[in-house]
View (tube, rainbow, N blue to C red):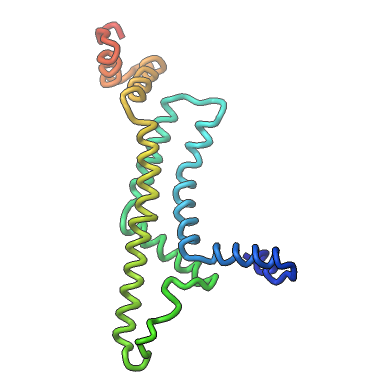
Length: 192
């Protein structure tokens, strides 16, 4: 932001215009809040992403890691986590002078005569904005990532592959894994 503020004072019209435009775009509450949601998601998916791109990888560890990420993100999908993130975004917005509410009240409201109504309107706008961000940004983003991870790491093939991996690599595989592989391949459990 400091670099953009400096550039926005440049005499070159192109530099001035582009830096002002970028500065205006990032000094937006929706942008700040979106970054915070991305931080939540990326900080929880980073280890899984690095593991999946690594040279040494096995499907069992990948599945367990993906399951842990799904569980963690699903646990973040609640009112308490949303409210905490909203408060944090509000603090950041105040530091960089972003307003959460419209900067002007409707002209028909005169501050001295309608203070109670104005306060009610401000609370309503704030609640409407919070509802919008909760439903369309926060919950939707978490739901999309969880859904995508589940579609890639849950399913019959993953379950069978993990069960087979445990049978091959474990000294004492569980009865459930033996049954899963037995059912999938139509092999007698005793042969496994």
